[in-house]
Image 1 (cartoon, each protein chain N blue to C red):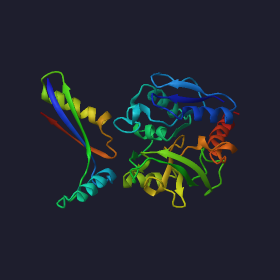
Image 2 (cartoon, chains in turn cyan, green; image 1 turned 135 degrees about the vertical axis):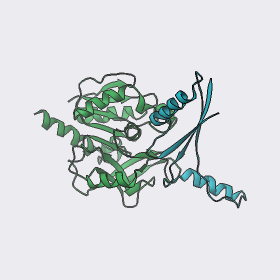
Image 3 (tube, chains in turn brown, green; image 1 turned 120 degrees about the horizontal axis):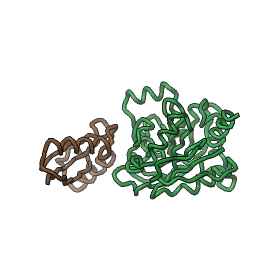
Image 4 (spheres, rainbow over the protein chains, first blue to last red; image 1 turned 45 degrees about the vertical axis):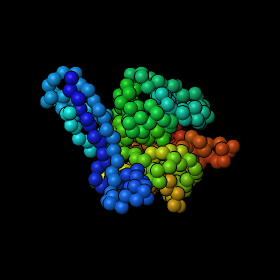
Length: 80
Length: 226
């Protein structure tokens, strides 16, 4: 079995109002060292088989077809 | 005049749409469940509002990948008008039938109120019964109505006259870029809009400003059929 973690975040340049709100809340809690916050989503996926390159191919396809909206989001894949 | 309403698990404005279409076209629409792979012969397909699949993943994302969407694409490619309202608009962008994407409202809150809309293009099958630059009233109710498109896409849809409705008189409720409230595809037969014209078609609702969308598209069909 292969385990993977996919991270989806908003593209640079796309306004992230949720990230901004979290940023404001962290500042309000006294974390004065916070420069900026961008929020996103994480998917932990378990795949059948052992072939990593096949798995990456499949994961890329999942991201393009469903897990991210490539108009506004970027994704990264890590096999763990 | 055959109209069709698509239903997904979590659609909740379908009954409002059925009522509006029945009243304006004179016939009850046929209802098609999202798992169907075919849509019977129709003159108009409507994707109503709601929270398909509980807005899981992204609003409209899972509905956009359901079996009925291929059938909708087939009809749309033949020129059949498709109208997506609210969640319907979100589904159409997620399905790639309309450009851009819908994001969380800039104010982060669900907004449920009346807005003013400018009819930015009255020369389409969905807006021909309005006057150019007419200001109409329309209710909105959504959490993810903040339309976004990259600069190049935006230039294209603005240049082609694909923006049909804009929020007017400082009533933009969601931070949508260029105050965009409704756009069509390049061919002009698919309209997505966040406001709910089906909720302003009778006097008891406080006005009839929404009726023009349905009268435009149903009238256009009648002309084509004759």
